[in-house]
Image (tube, rainbow, N blue to C red; front, side, top):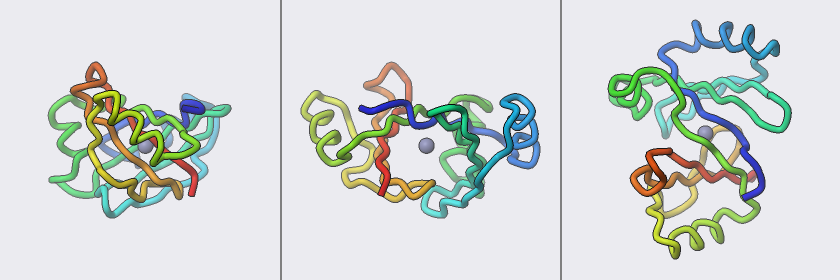
Length: 132
Ligand code: ZN
């Protein structure tokens, strides 16, 4: 894995949280994007090499809505950038990790992504991502 590409934070409202994080990080949000497949609106901040991705659900039955309902707002996932996502998926599967999607899928920020089941990663949802 190359680096921590971003940290995903589940929030109830981007309208509330974008100005909050702009103040916290002292930088403006540089991009917002809806990922319809995941039922989320995302907002990105750059902080050095790493980004902060705020995630707001667009639907009551979306994964982020369910996460916020169960655990409240907070860190949702850590994303690692990889050079070859398919090779990394194969490697991790061989090590006994469980992939939540068998094929890389389209994520926010023009990335191919794959998630690992948090049950096998000490409760931390891990995202692999690769620039397209
Ligand atoms: Zn992410």
